[in-house]
Length: 455
Figure 1 (tube, rainbow, N blue to C red):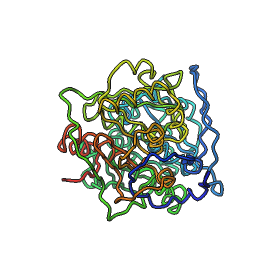
Figure 2 (figure 1 turned 90 degrees about the vertical axis):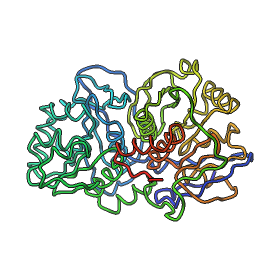
Figure 3 (figure 1 turned 90 degrees about the horizontal axis):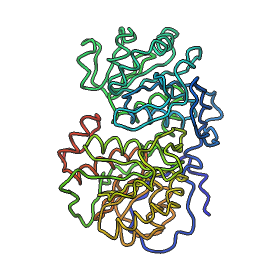
Figure 4 (figure 1 turned 135 degrees about the vertical axis):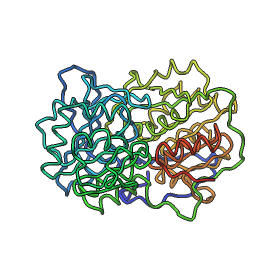
């Protein structure tokens, strides 16, 4: 097997390839380095809950002091914002606590994704954090606002001039009534900007005002998270993490998307989409794709290939699936999308039920796709023969085939693939565009505050 030790400074993503049927001799461990961040030991709540143990990981920034970060969540929290914050900060080496402001640890986010917090906010009241970061979403932001414990923690953070931040609706709905925006330039989601004091409101994706950092919405979450990484660990670490997320190093001269053998994807009913998940699946990709497709009014089923509905994602986030894969297999899907995560991809590959679903999907001429390392599943099952595709750089580098121009997303007939992580937003929006047309994708992008091409 080829060595992947240089992955800490990822190379520029390779262009998409046309795959042959030559055997895949060895698979790289994509996250052997990119996922080497230490996840926190979840604090126990007073309410017993069945949990999975986080994977053993190594902090990529051991030369830096540990930083403690609090990310609170409640019913209706925006899942993209919460999960991207947690994942990115953990990649940088922060000890992140995902705390529920609800009586339960499991919450249903604004888009229907069910997340399980590490602990209850009540266990955090005496802790000192290097950063408190509030995700948005409604009614999630209001649930955060109504937590007296969170208000006390965040107010103390501001008083002692330690970093705090909020994104989307949270600056206007939570920080403003707490009195934590005084004399500070602030941004938030466009739908809430008129609630901010006019003189101090700004329409930038990221606004840093002393200890306060604010941002606009799900589509600016990666910028928001890496900005916070820069404040905690320095700009060099923020740039390194950005490269690992595939935010940087993309060929500026290449098209954002390439399509070959174009065919119509539209259906005469609400599209039904299956997203299988496993322990070790990449949480950013799962949550981003599910959230965006549901915003577009797609019927999405998240199915676990494990024995339980709850899975432990690659970065330590716990996600609760809608169904087990055996139950989900009773339906016929217009589209099956595989999320990445090297361990998760291997576990998906071992699912006989999923293997049959994918084979039937391709045989029936229905749509399927993969992002990041899950390309290897399609490759090993012979579903990439004579197809153009792209994947995570460390996977695609193992395949020696004819190069074509690089892009974030590649579509070939009824196959769609993408590089991973930060390209998941483009990937999901391109699926929306193919299913419903450009106008629907553009509308969803505007709600995300994401810059989607005008044509």
